[in-house]
Image 1 (tube, one colour):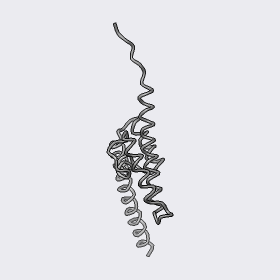
Image 2 (cartoon, rainbow, N blue to C red; image 1 turned 180 degrees about the vertical axis):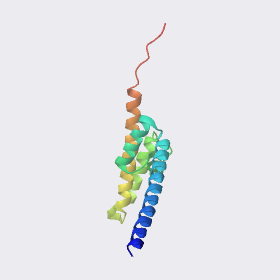
Image 3 (cartoon, rainbow, N blue to C red; image 1 turned 180 degrees about the horizontal axis):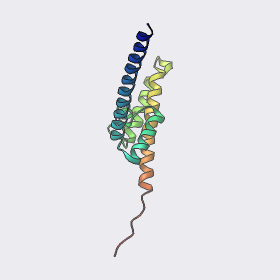
Image 4 (tube, rainbow, N blue to C red; image 1 turned 30 degrees about the vertical axis):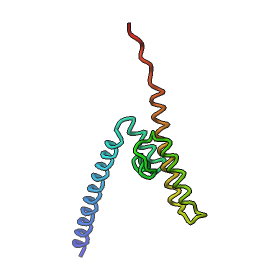
Length: 129
């Protein structure tokens, strides 16, 4: 009887170990793919931090506010106002959708802020004669 219990414990441990190893490999592959999509390096770290802060990727935020590029400020602002009014709770709208709209606007604003910082921080090249 003790022999069978020992075999069950060993087999159970092997199954759990294999499942854990497979899950770990999948998580590593997903992390590498996400880093590759974010641009990698320092830029990828900044994008990942902004995504984690708002819970949205830049692409998702642009889709929510129906824009193609983050620098379309007038279109984004117009769509933001329209969607916020259309989803007003007093009119029977959804607080959840309003939250997503606000987060999308914050994500796009973060992206614009970071892009302005990187262009402002570029050192001037010395003139050559």
